[in-house]
Image (spheres, rainbow, N blue to C red):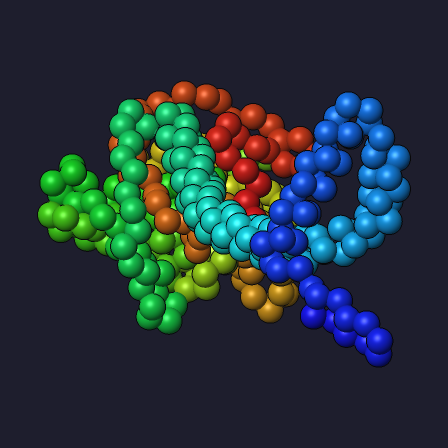
Length: 299
């Protein structure tokens, strides 16, 4: 009950107020339904209360945005991790593919070169390289069970590497042309000069010995196997002359050459059974020197 000096007012009960406001609400709804009398008032009130509605929805919008941001960031992180792992796997496969492609290219070159000088050829993997100073030998994974014989020529797709000097059932020892105890008969492609190339013990140098000053030999001349003795196939590259020293105090020229075969870089070599006659003739060199089928100019 409300009271003031001189008068008093009794407050309606809760039930009375509920009935009054309910009746008023029903009356307003009936009037609005029949005559749309409250449309303007409702529009005005919506304009007044719109900022309040916007403010009320801000926390919910911020929450949704944050949740979406964190969930999206997590999804991006998971996707990135999956793609990174996949990239590593693909790069590893690509490296293996490149290695296999290089190996296949090397083997095709080996077999292509062998077809020129051999009736039969077998690829052999290098197992070991002799580490003793000035001893140029390798061990290959082919032996007597594969038909390998003592003295058999060993080549790569560039030139002659050496010959088999020891044969076991499963593996063989190959003496390279750079070994100090090795010698191979050769022929100068430019003029047909026959001589012998000797190993020096150095990994990239052989020597041409016992030639005197009047002989016709020049730096850059290509020396190929002469076929004398029947061990090596005729006409396959051996070395290219790199230096000639004419010392008046010495009876012979000091001539050095670089092997054409890649003695220090191969993983596989080729064992060949030479043909009786060559399948292609030697050709005169151009200004750059001769390049035979399946060969290169060396290093």
